[in-house]
Amino acid sequence: MRQWIFFITLLFSVPILAKTNLITQVYDIDYPSNGETDTLVLLTSGHVAKIRSQGQNFWQKKITQELTSRDQWYEVTLDQDRYITNIKEAQAPFTPSFHRTKMNKAIQNSTYVPTTVESMSKAQQYHRSGRRTYNGETQCFNRGMVWSYDWWKNHSVKSMKYWIYFTRNYIRKYNFEWWFHISPYLHVMVDGKVVERAMDLKYTSSPVELRRWTNIFMRNKAECKIITKYSDFADYPYTGDCYVMRSSMYVYQPADFEMNEAWGYTKDNFLMDEVRGAYLEAFGINI
Image (cartoon, rainbow, N blue to C red; front, side):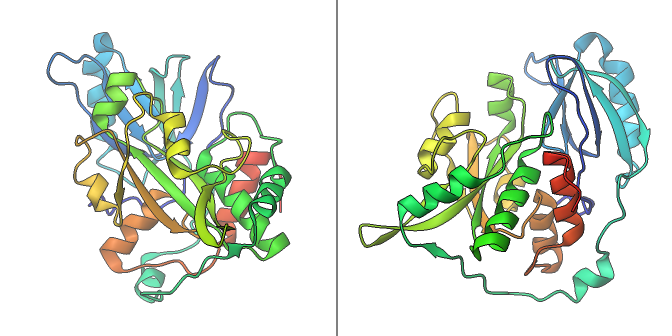
């Protein structure tokens, strides 16, 4: 259990085709084995950065030293192939909204009841009306937070979120750029039955079934194992290709799941610092 990831990642970047500058933290490092050459650096932004084989001695030592201060933020520069070209300490881009003392007092075992949308046409209406004026190279968890908050604020809809986690084996095999991705989803009434439909406005043109959504990212079309707690992925990062987890609309990043397992911390509302940060990073909007 990586209990040290307490903070929200706010990311500033330029288009990936040039170079990318990230203000982020280091989530984990995956060292090469079995003839592999690149070291993978998993960032709390969701990115998978890489260290070139010819530079590993320098960068491995530098990043390992930095991991001794796990609350530290860093400015990480990636080239167009996601190799790290520079990393240096940076200031946190915001003041954390909560601290451990507040976590210990959080409501446990809270009940979350998502809205059931009346029809597929209504779900499609919500999909079409979602924000798409992205602020450059934006992050999935920020887009998802904004869409979920907008639907709740404007239509009183309580949505859910899908979380897909990619294993180290899958990342290495396909040189995949993320270690997780998220999408809101809705419960929709269709032919007298309630079904789930992913609402990933950036990657789909309409609400889609879970398997159609995961197939967008699974280059081998693998079926992802459904899990109910984060440690089922975190403790087995090399097993299979992918995992899918469900959550309420309030969950912002994987750190929320870690805090839930470690201390029973459960969000039962939006944290406005997270919402404001999401609007600013994803859409350049101050609220």
